Amino acid sequence: MKVTEIYASLQGETTHAGRPSVLVRFTGCSLRCRYCDTAYAFYGGEESAPEEVADAVRAYGIGLVLLTGGEPLEQVELARLVSILLDRGHEVLIETGGHRPIAGIDSRAIKIVDVKCPGSGHDADVLWENFEALGPRDEIKFVLTGRADYEWAKETLRSRLGRWRGTVLFSAAEKRLAPADLAAWILEDRLPVRLQIQLHKVLWPDRDRGV
Image (tube, rainbow, N blue to C red; front, side, top):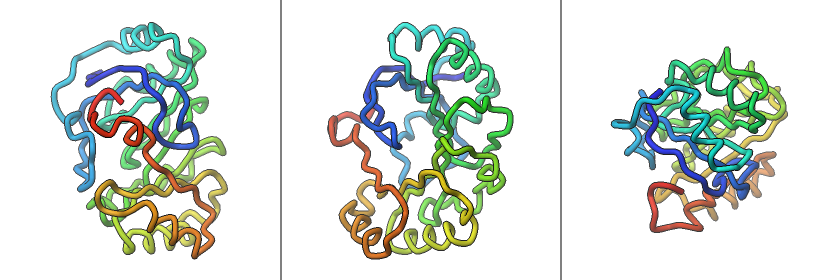
């Protein structure tokens, strides 16, 4: 496994925002979303065995773990790491861009799966069968760059994800869409979604890494 960084912070997104957690950021992603804020994780990193990563996580003494990237599902041994962490008593969240299969990942882990909107440049890469495999604790996330993405996401919820009854997160892409505008659209349409603000960027606006 290739790892960019492991650190303790407050969970910045999802329904778990605000909880102390250990973040494992993996290196490498085959996507190049136009709004990506972690491009530093595309290259570099250090090779580690799953057991070494799990030991580094345990050293922080925090139960919640977020596996992110980059793209964690592009790590060949991710499934083994997830099972190790769960067997050690950790609660595991996995953030994925939604273009790699989640089959084979321990069902005890919580998956947060992106639905890439057209503004990302990767709406054609969404692996729709992933959403059939999600459970009630898993979450779906849309990152929106503007009104066109919002309308696309609304229609996608209706036409493709109409049976989903779990949490749906709407997030405004940084410097592309004002969160207040997104909030107004959600209220106007009475959408059953959750507005997401990146808490870590509110708390540490001048830091790009380690938050």
